Length: 134
Image (cartoon, rainbow, N blue to C red; front, side, top):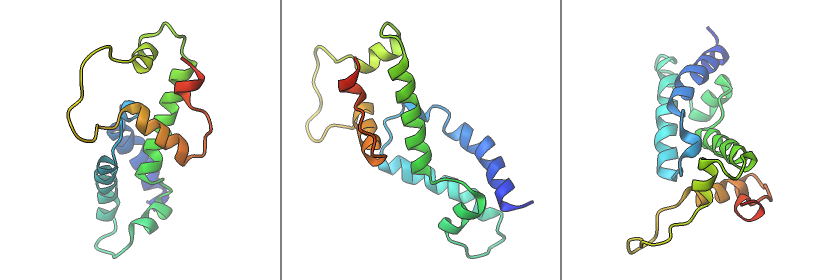
């Protein structure tokens, strides 16, 4: 079986299961690194000890990088939210703000909104869903 076919099978079964709800995550870089490591572990088993770089494996299998997969899923979910009617609960929750409470000291954790803005900037997309729609 060719590496291209193995990549398609891996993407259909393993990656779809692994990233099932990833579009709603606020994805941190350390999570991307861990997911990338687990993604690259499986194709290396099929190479029988050959010394092949991760980049070559991605090219042979036709798989995108984990970061590209996560960004694509995140932006797909954001587009879905933007097209929702304003009375739907997911859109209401995403666009709402807490009326009270406080955060811990130090640098705050990234929110979905923050990671989404970073992903839009990486893809050179000029739309900001938090200012253009509400």
